[in-house]
Image 1 (cartoon, rainbow over the protein chains, first blue to last red):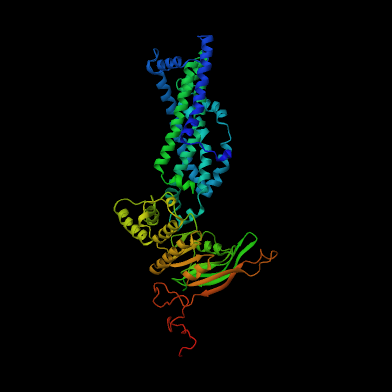
Image 2 (cartoon, rainbow over the protein chains, first blue to last red; image 1 turned 135 degrees about the vertical axis):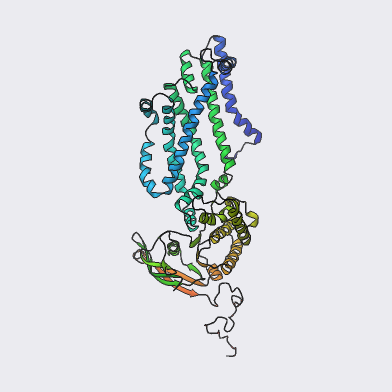
Length: 272
Length: 275
């Protein structure tokens, strides 16, 4: 039988899906155990217990200097920045994308401009943001917005222009004004696609966030892992990285759930 | 004053002349079928009637007024595909037109006006056989149901003309026959003039009151670009099919017409019949 026709059965599929995770964990445990038997003070691949202990200290013991529960204040600071910035980016992208995709005049005005601006590497702009906006929250949020918005605008503009021309003609024959077409025909069809665009930007958004926090911050998940790097604290860095990954994965899953839940027509309409 | 008047209309696209020198009138309540080979400009002509594109020369008058240069609520349309909105249920699609008319800012009605409109929309859905499917999204419907819905959606706005661009071309034969009957019923019952593009001659003769065939007079490769299509045949269906007078004066398709069936027309002389 050809490989392209070999399909895993249900149980096999589950096994296959978990296999890479299990292998990664097993490889880590084996190498960690090997290093620790050689040198119990090894910091590079800490045992699970060591990491758990470090995490417990950060999460459940108030920092003696500030009285904060560091793990939670870090998470809160990072998520606040991330969600605020992504919210802004999404809103701008929605308005700009619909306007540029639907109105030829707006497209002519902004398409080339956005295409050029989206090519500027956001991290190269970070120093400029730090200089102009200072080292506070504004520059970090601005970095994420600048990094994510142009791509989302371009994506959404394309999605709008992909709407069948027949739909816009039909709406006009129903007497719709440009505004009504935007509001009742284009916008509702763009919202689920906006969720797709947002999901794709979660990765870059985390990248920008951690870069900004690493360079200048006094809280946040990115700040913490770059801080403890000086002490070679892999027992903190590894759980933090896992936590960041989990947060990103959960927001992605949440968005997917929202899309299916709020736009029940979308999956079938996209397939047809 | 004629209902629709096409005056010396030419359409060119780049160097290509698509349609040349069209001059004809369309009477109110007629059901005009546009037929012709692929690429003869019948769809281009329909899109000029719709206002999506305008004639290069000449003009089209609707009730004595030049057609507006963009689509409007006077002209309803159903395309072969994409005629309904995928994000609205059947009911939502049918209600959309009146909602847009009555709520200029939000395009959406609430409360009592919405309930009243809902009743109307449900009645129309029932008339096109979609009462059961009112809460379904278009992607959950068959092609035939989607086209029924598109018809209902267009009719809800009470257009003066309904433009149909091969609306039943992609349907299975059985379904197509059903929806053709529905179309004919709607035309009889609604104050409506129809212009329909089709490549199915049987459909043209089954539905139309008049059949207009477009054809290129010259089709040699070297002269193709400079000669557009024009009207090759303009056939009034005989015996005439009259809107709202379903089957009363109309015998079966292949039977001869009754004497004096149509006022103003000479009675058909049957061989051997007494004169």
